Image (cartoon, rainbow, N blue to C red; front, top):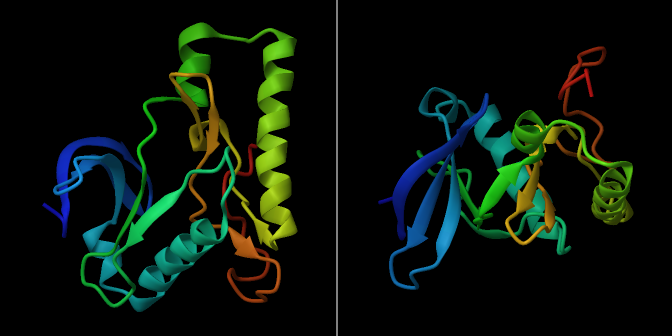
Length: 171
C-alpha cells in the first residue's frame, strides 16, 4: 500500500518511474500510481522534475488528456503521482498487434490528439514527448494523451541544457 492506494500490478516502466494499477482503499476506485524510481528520488532535481509533471497535468482538464487525482509532494521520500486508470492499450501496442490503420481512423485519432495538444498549448504547456507509447486507447475507443514528464511551460527558461535533446527525437 502506498498512502491510501493498494498496489495491484505493475503496468509499465519508464526511465524515471514505474506505473502500477492500484485501487483507492476506501473508495474502491482503480487508479494508476506512477512512482519515481528510488535511485532517482534521492536527488532533489529529480523530485522537482516529477513535481513539474504533476503540476503540468493538474493544469489540464481535457477529455483526451490523462487526469491527475493525487500527488505525494516533492518533499516525500517516495514520490508518486496518482492518475485515472485507463483500461486499454497504448497506440504502440495496438500498432504492433494490428499494423497500419485506415487513413480515416488515423485522421480521427489525429484530430483528438491535436485537440489535446492545442488545449495544452493554449495554457502555455508543450508536451515534448509525443509518441505512440504516450497515447492510450481506452476500450471504449477514447484517446488519452499521457506522460507529461518532460513537458515545458512556455514561460520557463531553464529545464534542459542548451543543445541537449530530450524526449524521443525519432518522433
